[in-house]
Length: 374
Image 1: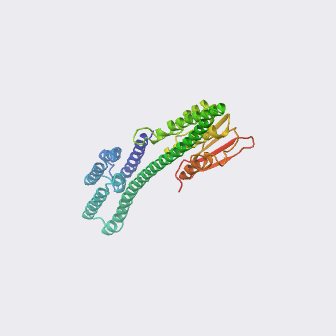
Image 2: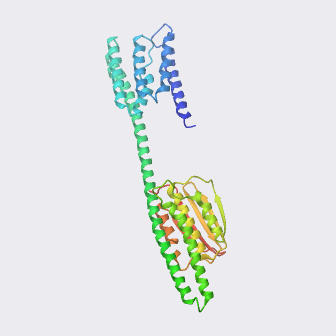
Image 3: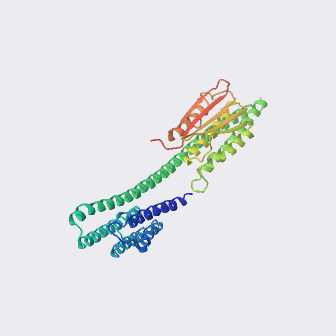
């Protein structure tokens, strides 16, 4: 579809040129004899070469200018200068050949003016009106083509800047994940150390309590292994693995299911490919939410909703547990819990809302922009 549009535009432009030049030939102004077929052959030439203007703008311009001069040398009916040369001049300027377009335009104007004065045309009309009008039309066409080229260059530069900004944000996300990983390991080691001390002190006097402490150690080890598997893949910057996104949501759901949760995923709106940074942020928010639920909520069911909007993704994670984590828990201290998610979203200009619904449980709602905020 995209490749057919330029061809269609060239076909329409060629048809317009053919009709305009053909109409001027048919009008045959100032002549009594009917226009010869050769004149219409030139009209087909002026129109036909436009199909090559994108690949060969300068040759098409030179061919059109040469054919136009030859047309008048053969004393064929007047067709003007602008219609046969407007599109070739525009194409050359659009392709960045502004000097060629300006030089050929000036050359054609000089040859035409000298020839008309030599034929005895009124100098006042030729120099005072016709030359000025033709020069203005040529200049306008060349300026328009150059403006289109410049605009495309600006858009390409803007797209490159956006790509670089997205890469920088992804790198910031990787660094933040590394800090989160540090917090996660520090917390897990602290838990293991605490319960190991308890188990060592109560091993003989209270075996049941020692067994519970060792079970807590094993659970903490299992959780941190899952976190490490999901996180380390995103930190391998030198490998080809992409930054994790919602395409890995099933992995998070499987891990939560293994931990005893019943997870439901629901999508609203038309799912679409997300920018890399937004995709990674959505994944991380979901990962943090499920991790907090497993550690603190004592929940049985979780509902994840992905609501796709034109300018943002609204992500919500709701559980039926005991509500938000307490102030002493890791999820509340900003290390790798709610505050960490809020900081991630702030980088994108998004927002995080948490609440305790009337039916119980805990709700995390993330607004993730899909476009860069000014």
